Image (cartoon, rainbow, N blue to C red; front, side, top):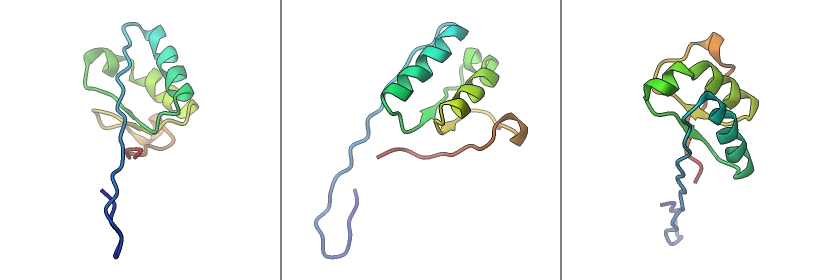
Length: 88
């Protein structure tokens, strides 16, 4: 909720969508869908499949300019930048 002095409270809407990836080829499709839907951010869950595919996920997040939050520490040489925020 955002409130400024002298104003009535307003509500923000947050839309959360889950995209499924079962193969490494699904990563590209998921990022294309995120771009099409103008996703504000990506949260990568700590699943062994995603951890194993982290290099591809990092590369796609950089290419599609999608800020991402990862379950593991990512070193500077793996990504240009990591931004953590929620689009409200």
